[in-house]
Length: 262
View 1 (cartoon, rainbow, N blue to C red):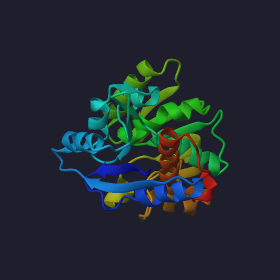
View 2 (cartoon, rainbow, N blue to C red):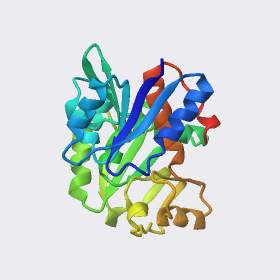
View 3 (cartoon, helix red, strand yellow):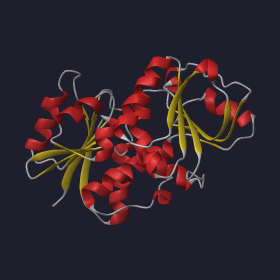
């Protein structure tokens, strides 16, 4: 019997999750139904309760409901607890379980590019939920140091304090845009600049080997500047596929190969 899955968000029309999960299922010989659910901004909880009460198996959660999803879960994975946000839900023994697969999706995408994470120094631009969600998986992947730069320094410092409490022995620090300098193996743009059309200017005295843009399908001044410097770049489609594969493996117990889908 076909199981029912969905992605829930507002807006939701842009989501590519149904096409990805149907492609994974076809490849792995699994029958499923995967739909989009538009939830009113004040109706997320009622919507997920309705989905599971009608026999739904698993939900992906996208903007702006990941923090609300976190608050609704009875059982959380370590990475969800650290991220304080959930993008994957399932019901087990009458309890709502939650995980955050975004960070592992990023790690898998970067590994797929053959960019070395072990013992690397990484700069992440932005101190929002997207950054919080990827720190723990990056540390697990062997990253030596992570520096977070943000327009509002206090927000980056707060994030560092939170994460240092959650992940002992983490090498993590915050800097302001004015102090953005040094040498890094990888720079990750976790801001919404490419989505909002805002420009992002990298100083000449910032040096790095690779550039990863979390967003995808939009012009990116961040990637444009890296390309001018002849630095290898990637937009975030691989991360999107990677987090979807991680969700799929949680629900079905089998893992599609990332390289088959990017």
